[in-house]
Amino acid sequence: MAKKDYPYQPLKVDKLHSYPLAERNSKVAIKDFARPPQASQSFSRFLDSLPNILAAADFKALVAAIVQAHKMGKPIIFGMGAHVIKCGLNPIIIELMKRGIISALALNGAGIIHDFELAYAGQTSEEVATELGAGRFGMAKETGELINQAINQGVAEGLGLGEAVGKKLLELEPPYIEYSLPATAYRLNIPLCVHVAIGTDIIHFHPQADGAKIGQGSLRDFHLLASVVAHLDGGGVFLNIGSAVIIPEVFLKAVSLVRNLGHPLANFVTANMDFIRHYRPSQNVVSRPTKSGGKGYNLIGHHEIMLPLLATAIIDELADTP
Image (cartoon, rainbow, N blue to C red):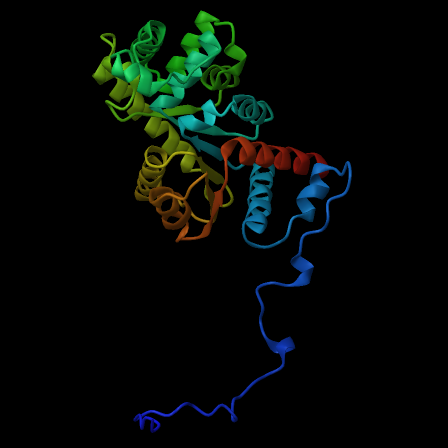
Protein backbone atom coordinates (compact mmCIF):
# COMPACT_ATOMS: atom_id res chain seq x y z
CA MET A 1 0.00 0.00 0.00
CA ALA A 2 1.35 3.40 -0.96
CA LYS A 3 2.33 5.90 1.73
CA LYS A 4 -0.35 8.50 2.47
CA ASP A 5 0.39 11.96 1.16
CA TYR A 6 -0.80 14.09 4.12
CA PRO A 7 -0.76 17.89 3.85
CA TYR A 8 1.34 17.87 7.06
CA GLN A 9 4.68 16.17 7.51
CA PRO A 10 6.37 15.13 10.77
CA LEU A 11 8.43 17.92 12.30
CA LYS A 12 12.18 17.68 12.00
CA VAL A 13 13.81 18.14 15.40
CA ASP A 14 17.48 18.28 14.41
CA LYS A 15 17.55 22.07 15.03
CA LEU A 16 15.99 21.88 18.49
CA HIS A 17 17.34 24.56 20.88
CA SER A 18 18.33 23.06 24.25
CA TYR A 19 20.15 24.44 27.30
CA PRO A 20 22.08 23.01 30.27
CA LEU A 21 20.00 21.31 32.97
CA ALA A 22 21.83 23.39 35.59
CA GLU A 23 20.28 26.56 34.14
CA ARG A 24 16.71 25.30 34.50
CA ASN A 25 14.44 26.25 37.39
CA SER A 26 13.28 23.00 39.03
CA LYS A 27 10.58 22.49 41.64
CA VAL A 28 12.21 19.50 43.36
CA ALA A 29 15.78 19.33 44.65
CA ILE A 30 17.66 16.85 46.83
CA LYS A 31 18.18 19.56 49.46
CA ASP A 32 14.40 19.44 50.01
CA PHE A 33 14.23 15.66 50.46
CA ALA A 34 13.12 13.90 53.63
CA ARG A 35 15.71 12.53 55.99
CA PRO A 36 15.47 8.98 57.37
CA PRO A 37 13.90 8.71 60.84
CA GLN A 38 16.12 8.18 63.83
CA ALA A 39 15.24 6.19 66.93
CA SER A 40 13.93 8.30 69.83
CA GLN A 41 14.36 11.55 67.94
CA SER A 42 12.67 14.71 69.23
CA PHE A 43 9.51 15.98 67.58
CA SER A 44 11.28 19.07 66.27
CA ARG A 45 13.86 16.82 64.57
CA PHE A 46 11.03 14.74 63.12
CA LEU A 47 9.38 17.89 61.78
CA ASP A 48 12.66 19.09 60.29
CA SER A 49 13.13 15.69 58.66
CA LEU A 50 9.97 16.03 56.59
CA PRO A 51 10.53 17.00 52.94
CA ASN A 52 10.21 20.68 52.09
CA ILE A 53 7.79 19.69 49.34
CA LEU A 54 4.01 20.06 48.87
CA ALA A 55 1.90 19.44 52.00
CA ALA A 56 4.89 18.87 54.28
CA ALA A 57 6.29 22.27 53.34
CA ASP A 58 2.85 23.84 53.85
CA PHE A 59 2.50 22.17 57.25
CA LYS A 60 5.83 23.58 58.41
CA ALA A 61 4.96 27.00 57.03
CA LEU A 62 1.64 26.99 58.90
CA VAL A 63 3.37 26.02 62.15
CA ALA A 64 5.84 28.87 61.64
CA ALA A 65 3.01 31.32 60.96
CA ILE A 66 1.15 30.31 64.13
CA VAL A 67 4.30 30.54 66.24
CA GLN A 68 5.07 33.97 64.78
CA ALA A 69 1.50 35.17 65.35
CA HIS A 70 1.68 34.05 68.98
CA LYS A 71 4.95 35.91 69.52
CA MET A 72 3.53 39.06 67.92
CA GLY A 73 0.34 38.93 69.98
CA LYS A 74 -1.79 38.48 66.88
CA PRO A 75 -5.03 36.46 67.02
CA ILE A 76 -5.03 32.76 66.26
CA ILE A 77 -8.62 31.70 65.60
CA PHE A 78 -9.75 28.08 65.48
CA GLY A 79 -12.98 27.60 63.52
CA MET A 80 -14.23 24.03 63.81
CA GLY A 81 -16.92 21.60 62.79
CA ALA A 82 -18.38 19.27 65.42
CA HIS A 83 -16.58 16.23 64.01
CA VAL A 84 -13.36 17.57 65.51
CA ILE A 85 -14.96 17.26 68.96
CA LYS A 86 -16.26 13.77 68.20
CA CYS A 87 -12.73 12.69 67.25
CA GLY A 88 -11.71 13.10 70.89
CA LEU A 89 -9.61 16.22 70.35
CA ASN A 90 -10.96 18.53 73.07
CA PRO A 91 -7.94 17.86 75.33
CA ILE A 92 -5.61 19.00 72.54
CA ILE A 93 -7.60 22.18 71.91
CA ILE A 94 -7.92 22.92 75.62
CA GLU A 95 -4.16 22.61 76.06
CA LEU A 96 -3.65 25.21 73.31
CA MET A 97 -6.21 27.43 75.04
CA LYS A 98 -4.46 27.12 78.40
CA ARG A 99 -1.13 28.02 76.81
CA GLY A 100 -2.64 31.19 75.31
CA ILE A 101 -2.10 29.98 71.75
CA ILE A 102 -5.78 30.00 70.73
CA SER A 103 -7.22 33.50 70.88
CA ALA A 104 -10.80 32.63 69.91
CA LEU A 105 -12.92 29.70 68.74
CA ALA A 106 -15.83 29.51 66.31
CA LEU A 107 -18.14 26.47 66.36
CA ASN A 108 -21.28 25.49 64.52
CA GLY A 109 -24.42 24.60 66.48
CA ALA A 110 -23.58 20.91 66.64
CA GLY A 111 -20.32 21.76 68.38
CA ILE A 112 -21.97 22.90 71.61
CA ILE A 113 -24.28 19.86 71.55
CA HIS A 114 -21.53 17.24 71.37
CA ASP A 115 -19.37 19.22 73.77
CA PHE A 116 -22.24 19.51 76.29
CA GLU A 117 -23.03 15.80 76.13
CA LEU A 118 -19.39 14.90 76.69
CA ALA A 119 -19.16 17.22 79.69
CA TYR A 120 -22.50 16.08 81.11
CA ALA A 121 -22.47 12.34 80.40
CA GLY A 122 -18.98 11.48 79.18
CA GLN A 123 -20.33 10.30 75.83
CA THR A 124 -21.96 11.62 72.65
CA SER A 125 -22.82 10.82 69.00
CA GLU A 126 -25.88 8.61 68.85
CA GLU A 127 -26.63 5.99 66.17
CA VAL A 128 -28.64 8.19 63.83
CA ALA A 129 -29.91 5.52 61.44
CA THR A 130 -31.15 3.30 64.26
CA GLU A 131 -32.79 6.05 66.30
CA LEU A 132 -34.27 7.85 63.28
CA GLY A 133 -36.42 4.87 62.36
CA ALA A 134 -37.95 4.81 65.82
CA GLY A 135 -38.46 8.58 65.97
CA ARG A 136 -35.97 8.84 68.84
CA PHE A 137 -33.12 10.64 67.08
CA GLY A 138 -32.17 13.81 68.91
CA MET A 139 -34.65 13.28 71.73
CA ALA A 140 -32.26 13.08 74.68
CA LYS A 141 -33.97 14.99 77.48
CA GLU A 142 -31.00 16.69 79.14
CA THR A 143 -29.47 17.78 75.84
CA GLY A 144 -32.62 19.52 74.63
CA GLU A 145 -33.66 21.01 77.95
CA LEU A 146 -30.38 22.18 79.45
CA ILE A 147 -28.73 23.64 76.34
CA ASN A 148 -31.89 25.57 75.44
CA GLN A 149 -32.16 26.68 79.05
CA ALA A 150 -28.56 27.91 78.91
CA ILE A 151 -29.28 29.83 75.69
CA ASN A 152 -32.52 31.37 76.93
CA GLN A 153 -31.03 32.49 80.23
CA GLY A 154 -27.70 33.64 78.82
CA VAL A 155 -29.09 35.60 75.89
CA ALA A 156 -31.56 37.33 78.23
CA GLU A 157 -28.50 38.44 80.23
CA GLY A 158 -26.85 39.85 77.10
CA LEU A 159 -24.56 36.92 76.34
CA GLY A 160 -23.80 35.20 73.05
CA LEU A 161 -24.45 31.48 72.60
CA GLY A 162 -20.93 30.31 73.37
CA GLU A 163 -20.63 32.35 76.53
CA ALA A 164 -24.14 31.32 77.63
CA VAL A 165 -23.37 27.61 77.35
CA GLY A 166 -19.99 27.98 79.03
CA LYS A 167 -21.52 29.87 81.94
CA LYS A 168 -24.27 27.27 82.35
CA LEU A 169 -21.79 24.39 82.37
CA LEU A 170 -19.80 26.05 85.13
CA GLU A 171 -23.01 26.45 87.13
CA LEU A 172 -24.01 22.79 86.59
CA GLU A 173 -20.52 21.42 87.30
CA PRO A 174 -21.07 18.17 85.35
CA PRO A 175 -18.60 15.33 86.02
CA TYR A 176 -16.56 15.76 82.83
CA ILE A 177 -16.47 19.56 82.66
CA GLU A 178 -12.68 19.58 82.23
CA TYR A 179 -13.26 18.32 78.67
CA SER A 180 -15.59 21.18 77.71
CA LEU A 181 -14.51 23.87 75.26
CA PRO A 182 -17.20 26.46 76.20
CA ALA A 183 -16.59 25.97 79.93
CA THR A 184 -12.83 26.32 79.47
CA ALA A 185 -13.27 29.36 77.21
CA TYR A 186 -15.56 31.02 79.76
CA ARG A 187 -13.11 30.35 82.59
CA LEU A 188 -10.09 31.59 80.57
CA ASN A 189 -11.97 34.60 79.12
CA ILE A 190 -11.47 33.38 75.55
CA PRO A 191 -14.23 34.22 73.02
CA LEU A 192 -16.07 31.10 71.87
CA CYS A 193 -18.58 31.99 69.17
CA VAL A 194 -21.38 29.70 67.99
CA HIS A 195 -22.86 30.12 64.52
CA VAL A 196 -26.22 28.45 64.05
CA ALA A 197 -28.45 27.61 61.09
CA ILE A 198 -31.94 27.18 62.52
CA GLY A 199 -33.22 23.65 61.99
CA THR A 200 -29.83 21.95 61.65
CA ASP A 201 -29.43 20.97 65.30
CA ILE A 202 -31.38 18.52 67.45
CA ILE A 203 -32.04 21.09 70.19
CA HIS A 204 -34.14 23.14 67.78
CA PHE A 205 -37.11 20.77 67.85
CA HIS A 206 -37.33 20.61 71.64
CA PRO A 207 -40.14 22.75 73.11
CA GLN A 208 -37.69 24.89 75.09
CA ALA A 209 -36.08 26.20 71.88
CA ASP A 210 -36.60 29.93 71.36
CA GLY A 211 -35.75 30.90 67.80
CA ALA A 212 -35.51 34.59 68.66
CA LYS A 213 -32.97 33.98 71.41
CA ILE A 214 -30.99 31.47 69.34
CA GLY A 215 -30.78 33.96 66.51
CA GLN A 216 -29.99 36.89 68.77
CA GLY A 217 -27.25 34.98 70.58
CA SER A 218 -25.72 33.74 67.34
CA LEU A 219 -25.74 37.26 65.89
CA ARG A 220 -23.92 38.54 68.97
CA ASP A 221 -21.35 35.83 68.47
CA PHE A 222 -20.93 36.81 64.81
CA HIS A 223 -20.20 40.40 65.81
CA LEU A 224 -17.78 39.15 68.47
CA LEU A 225 -15.97 36.93 65.98
CA ALA A 226 -15.77 39.82 63.51
CA SER A 227 -14.06 41.93 66.17
CA VAL A 228 -11.34 39.27 66.51
CA VAL A 229 -11.04 38.92 62.72
CA ALA A 230 -10.45 42.68 62.56
CA HIS A 231 -7.16 42.14 64.41
CA LEU A 232 -5.80 39.47 62.03
CA ASP A 233 -4.16 42.19 59.94
CA GLY A 234 -0.40 41.91 59.77
CA GLY A 235 0.22 38.34 60.85
CA GLY A 236 -2.82 36.72 62.48
CA VAL A 237 -3.99 33.19 61.62
CA PHE A 238 -7.43 31.72 60.97
CA LEU A 239 -7.87 27.94 60.76
CA ASN A 240 -10.99 26.18 59.55
CA ILE A 241 -10.89 22.61 60.83
CA GLY A 242 -13.59 20.27 59.62
CA SER A 243 -16.39 22.69 58.71
CA ALA A 244 -17.53 22.33 55.10
CA VAL A 245 -20.11 25.14 54.98
CA ILE A 246 -21.07 27.12 58.11
CA ILE A 247 -17.71 28.36 59.41
CA PRO A 248 -16.25 29.16 55.95
CA GLU A 249 -19.37 31.21 55.11
CA VAL A 250 -19.29 33.00 58.47
CA PHE A 251 -15.59 33.79 58.13
CA LEU A 252 -15.98 35.22 54.62
CA LYS A 253 -18.81 37.50 55.79
CA ALA A 254 -16.78 38.60 58.81
CA VAL A 255 -13.89 39.53 56.50
CA SER A 256 -16.22 41.56 54.29
CA LEU A 257 -17.83 43.32 57.28
CA VAL A 258 -14.48 44.20 58.81
CA ARG A 259 -13.14 45.67 55.58
CA ASN A 260 -16.38 47.57 54.94
CA LEU A 261 -16.07 49.22 58.35
CA GLY A 262 -12.63 50.49 57.41
CA HIS A 263 -10.37 48.10 59.27
CA PRO A 264 -7.19 47.13 57.42
CA LEU A 265 -7.13 43.39 56.88
CA ALA A 266 -4.25 41.96 54.86
CA ASN A 267 -1.08 39.93 55.26
CA PHE A 268 -2.62 37.24 57.43
CA VAL A 269 -2.60 33.45 57.11
CA THR A 270 -5.52 31.08 56.66
CA ALA A 271 -5.66 27.30 56.58
CA ASN A 272 -8.28 24.67 55.88
CA MET A 273 -7.77 21.27 57.49
CA ASP A 274 -10.16 18.45 56.61
CA PHE A 275 -10.07 14.86 55.41
CA ILE A 276 -11.49 15.80 52.00
CA ARG A 277 -11.29 19.04 50.04
CA HIS A 278 -14.53 21.03 49.87
CA TYR A 279 -15.39 24.00 47.66
CA ARG A 280 -16.36 26.57 50.30
CA PRO A 281 -13.36 26.17 52.60
CA SER A 282 -11.02 26.30 49.63
CA GLN A 283 -12.63 29.48 48.33
CA ASN A 284 -13.93 31.26 51.45
CA VAL A 285 -11.02 30.51 53.76
CA VAL A 286 -7.93 29.71 51.70
CA SER A 287 -8.30 31.73 48.50
CA ARG A 288 -10.65 34.74 48.55
CA PRO A 289 -9.79 36.40 51.89
CA THR A 290 -6.02 36.36 51.21
CA LYS A 291 -6.12 37.81 47.68
CA SER A 292 -5.44 41.28 49.10
CA GLY A 293 -2.33 39.99 50.86
CA GLY A 294 -1.54 36.90 52.85
CA LYS A 295 -1.27 33.17 52.35
CA GLY A 296 -3.75 30.30 52.48
CA TYR A 297 -3.07 26.59 52.94
CA ASN A 298 -5.07 23.42 52.31
CA LEU A 299 -3.97 20.48 54.46
CA ILE A 300 -5.85 17.25 53.89
CA GLY A 301 -5.87 14.49 56.49
CA HIS A 302 -7.81 12.99 59.38
CA HIS A 303 -8.37 15.36 62.30
CA GLU A 304 -7.38 12.79 64.89
CA ILE A 305 -3.91 12.66 63.33
CA MET A 306 -3.42 16.13 61.87
CA LEU A 307 -4.51 18.26 64.82
CA PRO A 308 -2.31 16.52 67.43
CA LEU A 309 0.61 16.81 64.99
CA LEU A 310 -0.08 20.53 64.53
CA ALA A 311 -0.46 21.21 68.25
CA THR A 312 2.70 19.26 69.13
CA ALA A 313 4.68 21.07 66.45
CA ILE A 314 3.50 24.47 67.70
CA ILE A 315 4.27 23.72 71.35
CA ASP A 316 7.63 22.20 70.49
CA GLU A 317 8.61 25.14 68.31
CA LEU A 318 7.62 27.66 70.98
CA ALA A 319 9.68 25.74 73.55
CA ASP A 320 12.75 25.80 71.28
CA THR A 321 12.64 29.52 70.46
CA PRO A 322 13.22 32.50 72.76
